Length: 232
View: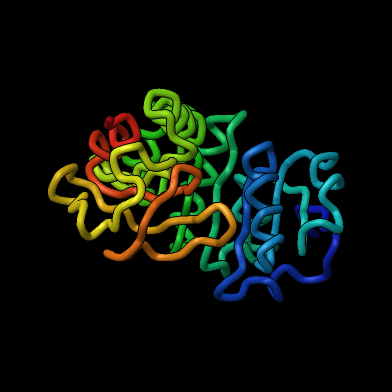
């Protein structure tokens, strides 16, 4: 007898291809993730304990199922063990998150991602052996902090001390070819791309000349990248 209620499909095993994704937990983060994947053409199996949550996504995901996400039998019946990519996006129940993650590790999922909601939660996931841990609240807090401090339009920390920032050029680099300005030597960052006011994105070259209403992508050490917009 099935330990789940399936909506929007017939056999989730048909979805478990190399590019499909199973999202376990359909709260705000899991829901947004699953819908974004679908928008980009990825087949998604969404699983949650709450049948009302599952029903709200019926027809919007390839398959949705109401099931006990900590049950090995239910997860195998849903063919979750056959997926190459699984995201454990459970946030409201720490025990369920840990048990579901442990189950995915038991399945030996090649690409397993898990959401952490606190530093202790992250530590437990690391101890379990999860390689890809997402901490949305902390990550977004850090990202916004850099944007606020640096007057940036966007900021991505690539590694502990390397960042990519989207910003406008400061006055000191306007109207001259980038090659003549030697930005990398003088400021320790690289202008990698530019979007002119009436055009799309294009790679920045030594011949690129910037205007005040251009938008640029700057990469380099985090502190230098963040501070580049404030140089006068």
